[in-house]
Image (tube, rainbow, N blue to C red; front, side):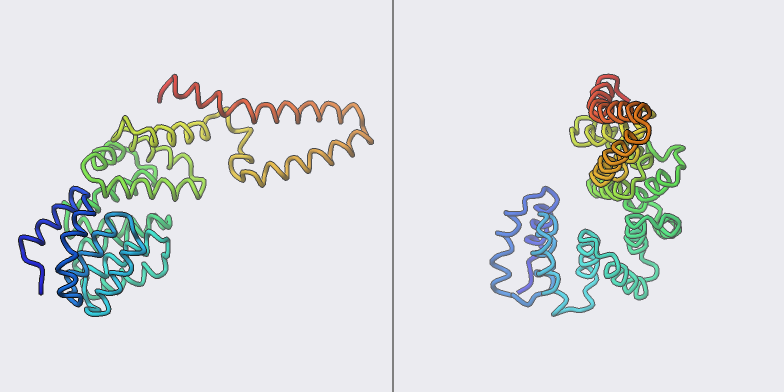
Length: 291
């Protein structure tokens, strides 16, 4: 039994409005009657993916590909799940396999560009985005990736406004922007991350998460945070090393040159106080002052 066209349209609508429980209930009976129908299984995978249940989505994708190994939709969804799990090598193999079969498919170039951008292969991402836009200039994913690549490359002329516009119009674009922001932060590329966060806030001015991230990044990149760079860059590890070096270094210095040791000890104490006081005060000031 295949899913009736009207029921299929209902499931698609429920996916669009994120009513995933209703979509599951609608699919339950057809799946019981036709458990080997690849399209039914694929719809079930899409429901779980939309609901953020990635393990369940992987299960359904495996069920689809076990019955229809060449199912393009399931393979694309598998790529997206691998990307979400940061299994980048497997994701690249999947999208390259799809591109060999469909070399004129703009979406595949855009998906590959997203992978390259998340792994910060920016030049390759740019080439792939350009190819996707050549094949399909109106492709939404390619357009948002085009703007994000420009931001990361420092080509800000018009790119920032395009990011905000695209994020407002497409939830997928917002997800891509948040993922890129997380990657840039993990790589300590704070100026580029700040630009992306600023456009997310422009697109969603009432989003407290975007505001908090932007305040955090602006504080990190502020000139007054430069003395704290080792602590910001290396976190608790830097703090521990600093304490150990300062403690034993000052103990030794006081034996050799007591006056100099006292001066350095006072300097270290002031630095510690600064590292405690500056971040919260700066963040409070930034919230009051704005951007």
